[in-house]
Image 1 (spheres, rainbow, N blue to C red):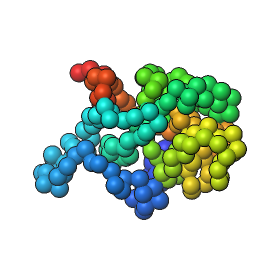
Image 2: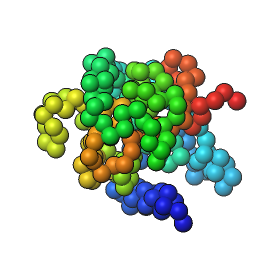
Image 3: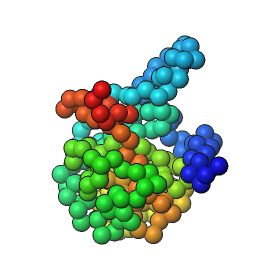
Image 4: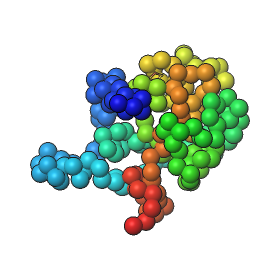
Length: 198
Ligand code: FES
């Protein structure tokens, strides 16, 4: 078993054991899966998921499930986007060049996204698989620096991420939050799981 396989197994185990608690309460995109035949279930498990973002307001996040993982879509405000630029110097990998969880080329930019306004990331910490908490409110608060600009805090071992899912320097998480393959079907619809037109 390679290191990567071990790491993947560990993440899967932690999610299954409830550390993440990430999948609870999701609006599943694959309803009534239990009525599927095994081959239909396998297809649904790997299928792409279409997300309607028309109701998402600036500063809000929605979660969908893709391949058993929570995928977050965050609509960032102009202020939040502006803050990302100033934060780059505090990031472990500001340009997303690390390869533990490779960032698609179209998201290798400061906001880590196709359209700056919308962040699409997998909501699982790259350290040991916990689910980071939303800490969108800027300013001093417990477990965060006084100059906090908004982002995510992993409660397990204290990794912090900005609102582009970039991990801060000197934290246990080895990489930024993973950006899944995705593409826009329209201004209000994102397809998670595919990034090329068939
Ligand atoms: S699992 Fe997130 S910091 Fe350890």
